[in-house]
Image 1: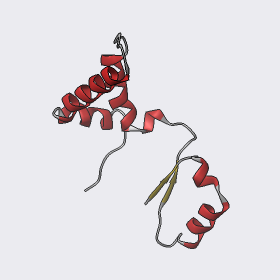
Image 2: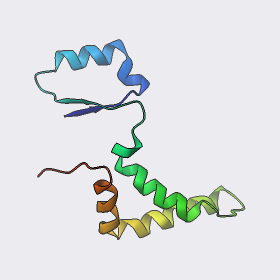
Image 3: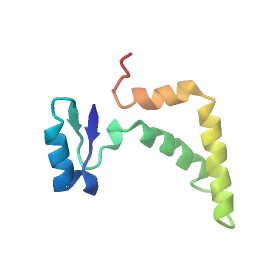
Length: 94
């Protein structure tokens, strides 16, 4: 399976040729140029930005520490991560 967005690399002739040559091996899903509603990462980053968005940091190290701390908190809340996936309307088939 290839999830193909409109990243510049995906638009090159070489990449298109490779995909055409391997079409028998691939199921290609073309995404719009920017599809935050289909990207579970956007939900995670929204949670992080909500926590650190108003942080009055003195330097980049403080911002980095706050982001890492928030990501660690989210990591231990699988229900939150699952909620970000559910928010896309997509599902993981096992």
